Image (tube, rainbow, N blue to C red; front, side):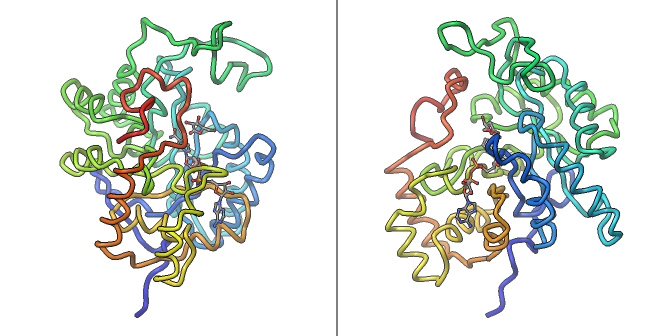
Length: 322
Ligand SMILES: NC(=O)C1=CN([C@@H]2O[C@H](COP(=O)(O)OP(=O)(O)OC[C@H]3O[C@@H](n4cnc5c(N)ncnc54)[C@H](O)[C@@H]3O)[C@@H](O)[C@H]2O)C=CC1
Ligand SMILES: O=C1O[C@H](CO)[C@@H](O)[C@@H]1O
């Protein structure tokens, strides 16, 4: 039987725009940032049409360089690529400035989607060695996160919503990231624009069942970050995933991507290695019963791999459960 590649699958946002099921993640390790440009070029050549980035990743300018060269070749145009960027909590009260900065870095007039990166408000601490002169993850002397306690996390989304309703030409859709059900419930009570997408950690050991049901009901696309459990995770060593890989004659990583894509969830695996970038496009027709089996395993053995210390106050982050 012929199957598509992951790069040929698209889902629909509540704005009616199409979003590719597979994108390239770009939260590269600091020493890998210079490799971002060649990674983007390798991904686009392999058929990727979604780039997931953020001001905080410090690589938007490298993506911009790659895109300029790609567009100069004349085969692809800006509208062929779906670009997502995000507003970091240091910019919680100046979302518009953050968008300007990202567009300048990326060298484009608009992005397809802007996400609030985390439902948190950081105090802005200046430091010439920081990102654009600002400390990315500000902490107090005791190491605890330097949160602006007067700030309301929903304020960032409300700014995005206002710009969206005013038909701001700098982005096509707005969404959130790292929002648990409780926060989405509040958002839906206080805002009129339903987020197009919520980007959270999802893989078989963090199946996010409750969030998935909520997002399905409200037509919010779920997007999986860290679909492999991030760098060094033991996920692809798991015997259950290895057994399924044998059954489908693929790799355990292919199973991990299929786990999301087969449930209608966008995935943004990260790599700067052209071989891995290409191999991640392989589609696996993972059957419903295998997805159910993996979800059940995850419910019994929950594990969050991206448990950021600053996320402590967000429901669900300090417990390894969904
Ligand atoms: N919204 C948010 O707060 C977050 C968003 N993200 C986004 O999600 C993306 C992916 O998440 P990550 O945490 O980077 O983890 P990931 O689950 O994509 O894993 C990345 C690791 O897998 C390796 N890898 C990729 N393809 C492979 C292959 N075919 N074979 C073997 N190894 C392979 C990479 O070299 C890297 O070490 C990020 O780059 C970023 O764009 C990530 C974390 C948080
Ligand atoms: O998106 C993200 O990636 C980083 C790691 O660079 C994480 O803190 C953030 O949410």
